[in-house]
Length: 422
Image 1 (cartoon, rainbow, N blue to C red):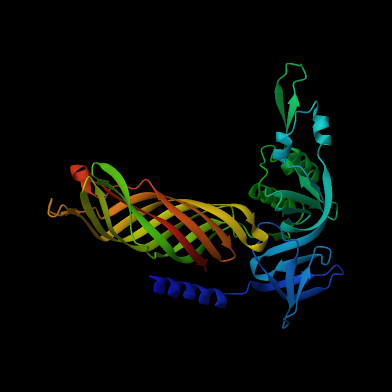
Image 2 (cartoon, helix red, strand yellow; image 1 turned 180 degrees about the horizontal axis):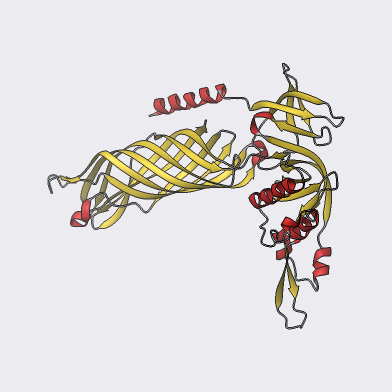
């Protein structure tokens, strides 16, 4: 078992060493209008980078570039551009405002919004007479959207919700909704009458904003740039680790859990995500091979029973994964998964032998079902392309058909796994 584990881990290490180092072709635009061609260490940022690592063509010297150092940079093969900008950003999110104490008036609520100035990299979504940008920070993981008309100042698009005291003094709270982003877009697009009726039901999300800004730019001239739309992307991975099998049985008239021998599961899988790396949600599936062996004695009332079982199984687990507390700018994320283990056992043996007193009953040999389902809960941590996770299976089904003579055999695993994404 240990030899197999070492072999798989060494293979994973080999793949990681020979994987790409993360640098991709890029163009950097200086403030004076000149350009530098080279490579940037690309991490498919979900949180906007505070700086980028750049190396010029045919050079091993890596330098850090901050928003104050350059005007923008473009990832050549990704249709992705980040622009340096001096912004005034709302310090309080919509959730912060909603959770705060009730205000006397809308004016008081609006005045409670504090702004901070910062120089940052904005991700360019649309460019033309009106440009659209997005900005996400580690402190505020909800997406901020900004517009800029021509060379005017950047304006944040806000959707506000305040708690107000009832003006009639009934000690109740009323809510005030202010779709400030619609007001801002109405002013910015007033030279195209097409938008008079199109902005009323506009939602504050990337797809709707990109559509409306691109349509406006084509109305007054021509759309100059549109970022790549979020597409589904598949990532493959391999994993291995150690698993401790358990089984619930009926012994001496009560239910007991028995332990099996440590085993080494080996699996491969894929995950599908829409959008950027370490996006909050994704779906996936894992196909694993697990061989479990049980050899345990239980005793009670001067009687002893030996339980022997061997299960050779293929486990297919579709799951949903969610990231949280993600430090995506450096490729780290905690995650959890919810899944169903669909097991198929080409070989499944289970014998119950009475060993004390000797020959008390003849051994009971059971024909087990060849399939089973268990629910799985997984928690893990990812760093770059490596991940580690703890897997717990719940609610196993008995493999003994119809619980013959009230006998049951419900197998499950607790596992620690490590894996690598390609």
